Length: 63
Length: 63
Figure 1 (tube, rainbow over the protein chains, first blue to last red):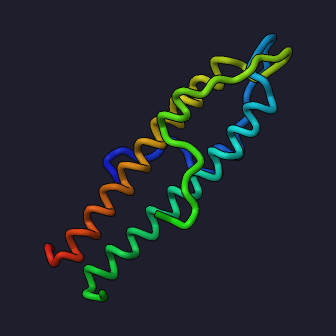
Figure 2 (figure 1 turned 90 degrees about the vertical axis):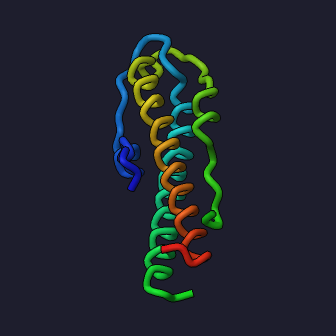
């Protein structure tokens, strides 16, 4: 993995809760945004796993 | 890339704006969260690029 690890996993984001405040950010806006971010954590991490497997196979000499 | 493309890039998230509403999500909480998410988009995408380069090198026969 890159020297720098990710701050969150998809599960971390899924379990996140935020305080409320007067005139805060619109709940639906944020919830929709967070759903897509969780999807992206999944997509990006699956791509990393896929590439790692490909590197392993190539290192073992499989084409 | 995985069949599924990511919904956002780090820049998309950086440029995002949300409506306000009465008793919405606390601004500081969300802003801090979003800063870390932007970092993660960068970290995960750099890792993907790094692995892609490694795959290319291995395919060309460099150890």
